[in-house]
Length: 381
Image (cartoon, rainbow, N blue to C red; front, side, top):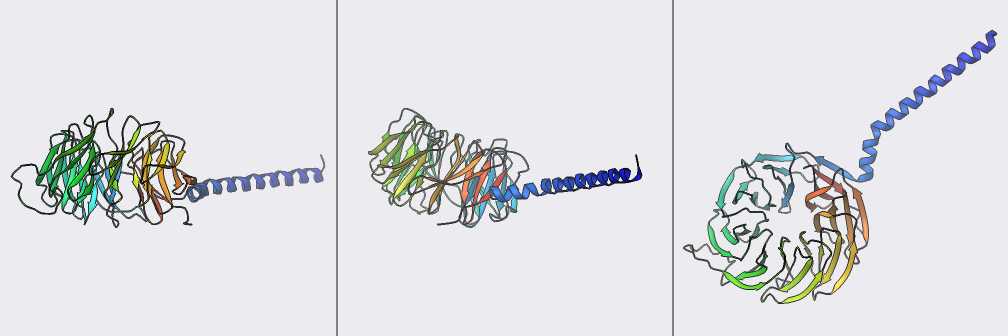
């Protein structure tokens, strides 16, 4: 082999090495930039992992976003960045399973040990706690300076905010595992496990008076609608408190007159109804766990119906233009309110579970592994 040929082969080997090194550098750069590219494509704004995994629920008063994990961890989050502004932990051997209701720097929530607690978010201290006769799984409802909460002992409790004193309690005929809906200053509607749907009321039942009640109930069950399956769907009131809406585990969605309990419409879904409906000025949107989403007019007529893939495990939450939901397939979807058409979809790092909350620019959702993540909402219009 002459010198010229050896020189050409040496140059060819060096060129190949330079090419391989260049490809290797490009590959490393792509791998390093891939998470940022995928994050931009998914719209992921931030993600927060808890100290201990657990189911997470949110509460907000429009300014502060409070995350509560079933393990007892509580955090006030900056919704724009996901950074915890304050953190605390409730010492309880029983899990916290109810969503918190948040107002004026405080949060009220229940737990499986039957206790209802008010937490001072600035200090992390428990301001008061009231013991009921069963697990408190449902989100409390606040009306003025009163808090309504249902318990597995079958009672609907009306508590004085600030002290936790029991103003009145009414037995509703079965365990209460879902949020009650205040309709008027004298009426509340709630679903039960085994006791159907009931309307509770009486003179001044939800007034802000702090008069002593001497332990006597100031409210009674005024009407009852029997159901063949448990009601674990939160009740919502709309049309200025004239109507209430909720679903049952037999797959029936009810629109009722709040004053009398008269059934205005009853629509059959394919799966269990456990997600909180969304009440809007001219319609109410409901979904079952199987993926069927329907919108109804105030008179009960079906405006549209859509089916999405995968069980729905987080939501519903509505903006001016769309309703948002999370699925067990690890997706966030937005359906247009006018016709139910899917207008936005993003992948999640894990299946959605727990709560879903909307801010001005983000969708904040809990995941099955206890993480909280926020995605950028689609552009308006």
